[in-house]
Structure formats: C-alpha cells, structure tokens
Length: 326
Image 1 (cartoon, rainbow, N blue to C red):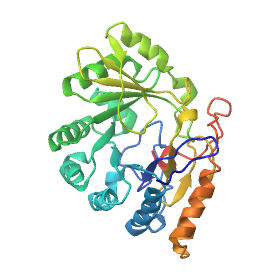
Image 2: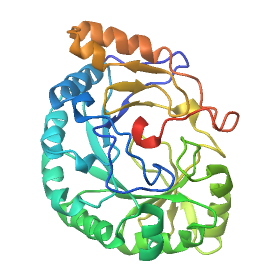
Image 3: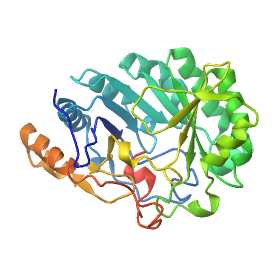
Image 4: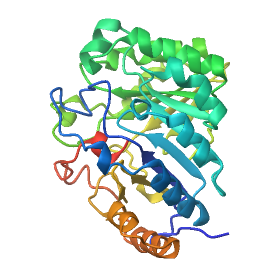
C-alpha cells in the first residue's frame, strides 16, 4: 500500500478539508468581530475538484478525512459531498468539525451520507458567556448536539478552548455535561493565530494545570480514543467518558504529526504553525493530470516542517484559523 512519508519519517494519513472560510459565529480566538475579507465562492474548490484531490490522497495512503471550515455547514449540499468522499477508495474515516448551530437540520443526512463522527466547538455552558465568546445562541448548539446523538453519530467530541478569565472556571462543569450525555471532551490551549482581537498569550492556560485541577475531583485513569488527532486522553473512572488534552504550546505533538490542511480555495498547508504550502487550485484549473497531482503532493509533503514555532515566534502566523481550515 502506498504511504505518504515526510522527511522526518511521519506517515501522513489525515487531511483536514476546509469547504468554506465563512462562519455563522465569531469566536474571539478565531475571527475578528467585523471581519469580512472572505474568499469569493468562485475561488473555492468545487465538489468535483475536491473529490479529485481527495481521491489522489486516498491512493497515496490517506485514510482519514475531516470536513472543516470556517463552518462547513454554511456551504450548500455538504451531505452530497460527504457521500462522494465516503465512497472513495482508501477513505476509511470521514468526520466533521462544526459549531453545531445548523447541525439539527443536517445531522441525520450527514450520518446517512457516511460521516461517522463529529467534533463540536463548545466553549461555555452559560448562555450569556457563550454569546460573548461567539456572538451566537447556546440553545442552537445544544439542539444540534442532541440531534446528532439521536441520529447515531458517535463518538461526539466536545472541543473547549480554555481561556484564562473567560471560561477557565467551567472546566469541571463541562466534564459533568459530557458525563451526563456520554460525550468525549477535549480541552485545547489557545494558539497565536492571526489578529483576532484576543491576546492568546494573555489568555493562555496550561492544560497540565487543568488536568491537576480535575484530578482533585475526578479519578482519571489512562484512556485511548480512535482517530487521527493529537489529543492525549484519560478516562473518568466509572464512566465511558474520555477527556483529551490538546497542548500545542505546553507539550507540542509535532513529532507525531500525521496531518495536512487543505483550505477552501485549494491551498495545501503543511503545518498549522508555518507558512509552507502548495497552491492546488491553479494546478487543477490548468489541466494537470492525476499523475502530476500525485507528484506535486508528494513533493510538497517532503517540505513539511519538523515543528511549529508558536513558542519561539508567536507572531509569525498572520493568517486566521478560518482561513487555514480548522
């Protein structure tokens, strides 16, 4: 079987596929409140182009695809795209990251299309605080979560970006919420990604401290979770609930990085914290062959950096997370 191996011996088997840079929320760590510098839909890869690129990745050994944005559910006909990607040779795992605002009306069709599991961003269980962080309504997200559970999507993972003085007092409440509903919980450290209006260094919380706090109340035992992501997991004793810690700052996981990101307009980013990239849209629209596309991707993967530099150069990345792809 073909494998994509970079120069540091890492097997690249996971593509995070952004289908839009637009979002129906304005999370303070992701996008400035008044931001309007979006790509025009004409610059997005169309579904045929996306299917072709992912088919090439599948032949090169990529088996995990995650649909992201922006918010993927603001793009029309995402269940149709999901169905096309799920049918591709080599693609064994199709998942989706969402803010869940529109998930209630799409959960069942996504599951039928081949999306097996979802990650949902949820940074607060307090309606007023949630609105302050995202400019959205908590009730819509909770409705979407319950619809996803009813549709059979599993596991459902809750992603909480922990921010000092904003929501760090809710970590225990979020654990209780996930125990109640049998959701997996992942805590995420803030990262310096573009000028969003949030000072990531000022709001940074070391997740090792969060874990120590949780150990005062919960018995945490070693745990594992399938999937291609970077979280380190523990399990709450007496339950099936796992808690993951995603620590790009305090304990970076670059040595095991197995992923690249494809933005909505066709830019293949080789590292979240570096600018190394390959522009695929011009190649696709100039008539490149599948063999040429494979060669271009293989050559790009050979340039994948060894690690990010969030600690050494926190202001290096000026693009927003929504532009990169979640």
